[in-house]
Length: 223
Length: 240
Image (cartoon, rainbow over the protein chains, first blue to last red):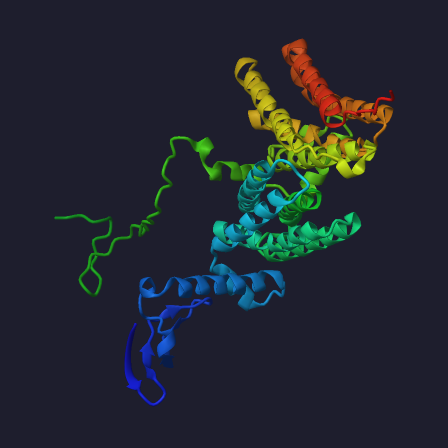
């Protein structure tokens, strides 16, 4: 990649032309792109990320998590969503897993906080691992970490449900909230996974996903 | 004079023409022979080569346990999907249903203590029954008693024999002692008959009836006693 830039002191930016490397895009066409860009001084991305401040790094990662969360949880199957989800990361799942485990272990109804924390943590990671492995063994064309990433992001509604149940004590309200969150999580995860499994094996791959979120929702309800 | 083939004619460019067929050499990287094939993920792919319809037929075979049709259903294609997810469903039902049953019976519902140990005990018991016991039985049958049934066929059969408990344990949530015993006995009968009927040919041929039937019956009996006395025990309030 090469670029020629010149400084534009009038509006404090640099302008130039970037010759990007020939790229093979999704339909196997080679494209050479030349893009004219204007880079403002504040968001120069060509500098190394080691030199930026911690706040900037964290904000960028949080923004990425937010974008992916929106893709996963507003289940419209557009191609943008699919492309966004290919850039998997495990920060999001880790954050939501820890949040869920902490919320449930700190809630007042149980006397075994550390045990609950450990159970939820292990359940989420081992469960995602087993469900993904199941989908792969059934012949699904699903990348391992991408699937773990999506399953982890879909835990977010159950997180919300667990947080709400901390504040409400009325059982039937809790039950409706948790059922709603379970259906939301399952719908998102199923929407993503069913595209990758052949038709005759779909239920075999989706039933474990449903069971996984059922386990987690049950914990959110009873704890 | 060099002889490149049966026809030594030269073509217009002066190359020797031979009428031997051109041999294409294709280079394919050979898969690395693993020291432990059973440890790789690819080995297990053969056990997930089934469809929804097959799973439905196998569960149906196991519920209609008196008909020895299981090996016709399975054919040469034992699967591990059934044993794994049927046992995981049973674990969830034990964990949720066992506590629900106690909750329904509890008088002081505000101070109900949820027992999380149910999950750990359920995982231990059910996975042992679904995997460890049939592996041991399969190894004994295959290598000591020289059966033609492989270890994975026995694991598949045991896994599907547990499918009746998915329904029975949901019914056991009803907190009445007699009802729970009745349902568990039905489950025990169905599961044991299924195993014995499908192993009958082998037992008759090898005259090893007692050696195989006794462990099967005793492990199934132990399983439902565990269910009744740990998960669905009814604790009645004692009137002083």
